[in-house]
Image 1: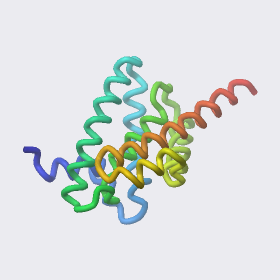
Image 2 (image 1 turned 30 degrees about the vertical axis):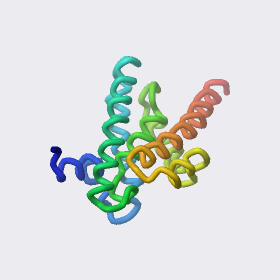
Image 3 (image 1 turned 90 degrees about the vertical axis):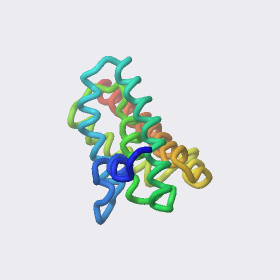
Length: 154
C-alpha cells in the first residue's frame, strides 16, 4: 500500500498544487524543468518516460481524488504536468519555446475545447482528470509547432 503523503506530494507536483491562487498555473511550472531534462534525451527515452509518467499520473490523480473526496480537486496538478509535457514532447528546449508552451497550454487547459471538455465533464476519475489536460496539450502542441514552423519561414 502506498502512503498517503507520497500520493499527495506526487499528485500536487511537489506541493505546487497547494498554491493559494491559480494552483493549475503553479502546477504547470513543474513542466519546465522536466522539459529541460527530457529534451536532452533521445526520442525513444522521451517517449518511454512520457508514457511511464502518463500511467503514474493517472494512478496518482485517481488516488489523490479518492483521498480528497473530489476526483478533480484543485490540489491535483500532476495532470497539468502531463498536459505541458504533451505540448513540448520531442521539441528541443529553448526558453522561448518553454514559455510559449506554458502560455499556450494554460490557454487550452482553461478553454478546454472538445474533446478535452468531454473528458473533463464525463470522466470523473484519474483517467479523465489527466486526459483532458493531454487533449489540451495536443491543441497547444499543434499551435506551438505551427508557430515554430512559421518562424523559420519568415
